[in-house]
Amino acid sequence: MNPLLGRLQPYPFEKLRALLAGVTPNPALKAINLSIGEPKHPTPELVKAALTSALDGLAAYPATAGTPALREAIAAWLARRYALPPLDAATQVLPVNGSREALFAFAQTVIDPAGGSARVACPNPFYQIYEGAALLAGAQPVFLNDGMAFEALDWRGVQLAYVCSPGNPTGKVLGLEDWKEIFGLADRHGFVIASDECYSEIYSDEAPPGALETAYSSTQSLANVVAFQSLSKRSGLPGLRSGFVAGDPDFIAAFGRFRNVACPQVPLPIQHVSVAAWGDEEHVEQGRALYRANFELADAILGRRYGYRRPAGAFFLWLNLADFGGGEGAATTLWKECGVKVLPGAYLARVEPDGGNPGRDCVRVALVHDADTTREALTRIVATLG
Image (cartoon, rainbow, N blue to C red):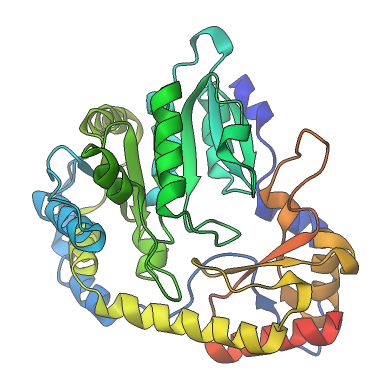
């Protein structure tokens, strides 16, 4: 058995199941799960139509590189969304089975573990795939704590940096100057930037800038920068498992070679659906409007409680419940007393050098349901905690 598996911590939802094992939620109330970031909005009609019209594609093996039509649709979307010059769809775009799988596999492609000194930089708190990818690639994850200056991290030995904007779980959005600072660090220390942008289309006001956009505007180059995207959040299609990676053609080529032997291809019907989804913005704006409505409910119901602030992007609340037993204590209370399931923030973070965990006092709340369910859940939280 691979000894590196022993370095993996239990996944956040495994920890949550263990925490709530034996805790019976209030039987008088219907349980509401706000712990997982799974969009609950209806599947767009254009997606259903595209899928049913392409089922004959199940009879053929798809190519790892995807169809030209899909790569071109992705390149066209990137150009529209980020005001980029047209990317070369053949060399700078690669379809993948959702960003989760690709974020993990990319580390296995770029990390050189020789000598045992390889390191991977991750935000803290963070999406747990980054840590697992680093460990199983033979590297040591190092963490940039939320609010910590980029320069404060020891970047020596870092070969890969995961960046997430808008962030999971905090919703923090990096501005142009933030991106430029990261690019400068990458130039000085020689690491690759893997930008996780799966929440880029969920925002209240301004569309957040992306890595490719700011890299090109700063340097006229996409060297050492790749961006990961998915239809899971943008189009509310988590079950489709369709996304892409785009950017530096050298790393796209290397990743393609890795995927040829280690990763599944995207089925042809899914590729056909993806072409339709990347080409349409109406359903995306409809979804964005539903999330805005949920945040307006949060503004009204939560007010200034629990350190609430409306995030710049994504669909999570990051609430400080230190006065209610911290993340684990509050999550247990909410599940038991009012049947609302939330995720303790400590499960999405790692211990800092001083021994503290930046998520210890917090919970992540996913506003992924319809307005009525969201209103009910937030009202219960306030009624329970006060």
